[in-house]
Image (cartoon, rainbow, N blue to C red; front, side, top):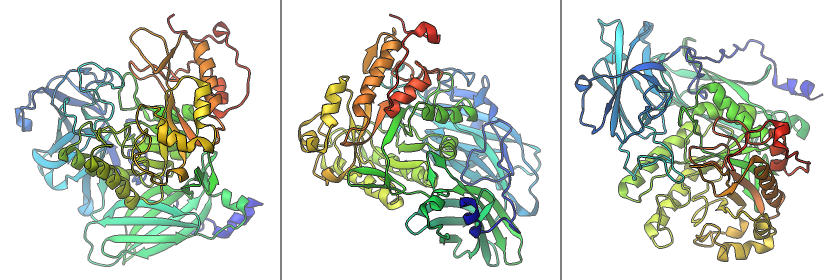
Amino acid sequence: MARKHLTQFGRATGVPPPPPRAAGASGRGYPRPMLERDDWTSLDGAWDFAIDHDAALRLPDEVQWGRPIEVPFSPETARSGIGDTGLYRACWYRRAFEAPALPAGQRLILHLGAVDHEAMVWVDGGLAAVHEGGYTPFSADVTDLLAARAKAHEIVVRAFDDPGDLAKPRGKQDWQIDPHSIWYPRTTGIWQSVWLERVSPVRIEQLRWSCNLERWEIGVDVRIAGAHPGPLRLRVTLQSDDLVLVDDSYTVVASEVHRAIVLSDPGIDDFRNELLWHPSSPKLIDAFLELVSDEGAVLDRVRSYTAIRSIAVDGGRFLLNGRPYPLRMVLDQGYWPDTGLTAPSDDALRRDVELTKAMGFNAARKHQKIEDPRYLYWADRLGLLVWEEMPSAYRFTRTSVARLTREWIEVIERDASHPCIIAWVPFNESWGVPNLPENAAERHYVETLYHLTKTMDPSRPVVGNDGWESVATDLIGIHDYDDDPARIRRRYETHEVLPRLLKRERPGGRALMLKGNGASEHPIILSEFGGIALARPGTWGYTAAPNTRELARRYRALLDAVNGVELLAGFCYTQFADTWQEANGLLYADRTPKFPLDEMCAATRGARVVIDLDPAARGEREAAP
């Protein structure tokens, strides 16, 4: 019945099929899933490498190259082949490559997914790019730098990353020689994919999607690079499975296209829901874009995707597609034992999304890390909600304000099209703004980033400062590691406790609100709690269980305390997996569950099941007594 109704949108007659999804030789998947082309080459793999301890070298000719490194793994990791976790201020990379033929004025673009923290890039001896910010991508048109006589060309990258600089966004990267407390090994230099792309001189440079569920609209914003003598048209085809929803063409004005595409409203909820994106039904709409000249020549062709869904907060509840949706989140640091911030593979990213859902969670709070776009791609495709949080700087200075603000803008521009992202979090636990209650400038800074974020993306809630000391926010995030389930339940049991909670309670030793800010109307999210570790030498957690049987029991008790509590619009358990010395993951660092996933899932969702606590019958690993 529903399928028959949806044929009103038309079938794919006469519409060119979208190109196949590209995959690189590295097996890591297309690095920029929101704007895909077929003609690209991965440069991941072996590069020449050198450490420049004091950052004394300035030009490629000064470098004495040492042993090779495996890109995109940082030199601190074992997988890179270097494994140097010392304190050094700069490092250098070099790789030879063969440039493809560039007929008809085509251009060659070099892309770098992320280089921490400042990068300078040379191609055949010419300076190609300079970029600051360790979590965001950058690119350069290197066509004019290619030496005409050379068949084999050369890329050199210098990465500067002062390990002791606390005024830059650094997230969980430790400034001490060894990881301590809640901080982990550093990440220096290249840690996401490097790749080449052959493009038309006139091409689609930026693409952003949005949607308006009430008006049944999809918004598309496109920027065009390059000059063309005649008028241009942008053809946009939107397709759901074999059904064509849109096949439109728009005039390019001043190198831009901004359009609200109105879809035919299916009307009845059953039909509407078939097109809505939701964790239980992550319906993506394939998009196919062509840039066409007035003579009908196709100048550029890209593939993308979007979705129809809405995010809102209202009456103390988080709403997904207009309906209350309790959030069951897990805090995810995004580290792997041998590869650090970089996933071992694209399959590893997909597996993390699958594990999160299998554990019973419907959302991940990516903590102090801007995740690889491939993770967001799998979250979009498999149906996992994501909170995106800016890695913190740890000092409040004019330099730190400028750095974090500039990079946060780049983060939003990179990721705003992903339907999985449901909240932006510019600050966590007052890190980088340590004197919020007394310092008006720090409060203005938080307020400014809140409003800047809402300006760039008014469609999502913004958590101005997660954990405590809320200044400007759409959600009140509370970090509370009380290990007594009864006290947790009493603290958040009903709406009647809200005045006392916001005025008197200090779960993290800090005031939850610095001013009223309409707090009674904001959803309350227990955005960090739990943190139960296995008691093992050299590790820690917020509390400790002696073995996996006790861990399972305590997890069940805590989740029973917060599931269905009237005041809470959601929760976020700490944490997904063990991360170095912080052993409070539900999974070991290698992603092995500490107790069976089905029992974990039942506890997370608040289902009542009998848990078999016999570890011998389950073949579990036990913690040391």
